[in-house]
Length: 141
Image (cartoon, rainbow, N blue to C red):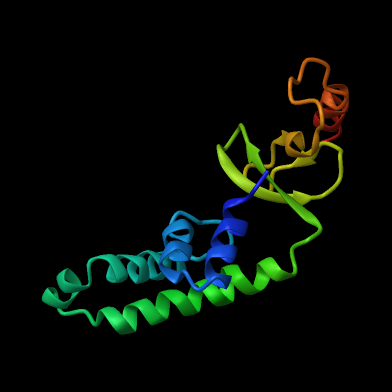
């Protein structure tokens, strides 16, 4: 599975900063509200620069701020994140990074038990070998 983070990083590495910010403007994990807002504003200033000039903003400066946040909070951390896998939590409906281990995990956001389905080779989920472990982990919590 190709993660959105990987797509944004790849676009950035290829020099397509606009595409990288377009993807990253939906990221919330690992960003403060202000950092998220800066990435969004940086992208919006690239797309609608004239509008932002009309409302008194400097699109070039705002874009640079968005790129800086992307670089520091998305790009650099992604270079060190080879031992995790992105998983969708069905409880809080958010994408989270989990350790790359085929075992039930606790969602870092909502604290519910989730399974590492992205690591499973059986895409039909008919006989999940972790389902019974999931119940045991719930009881242990």
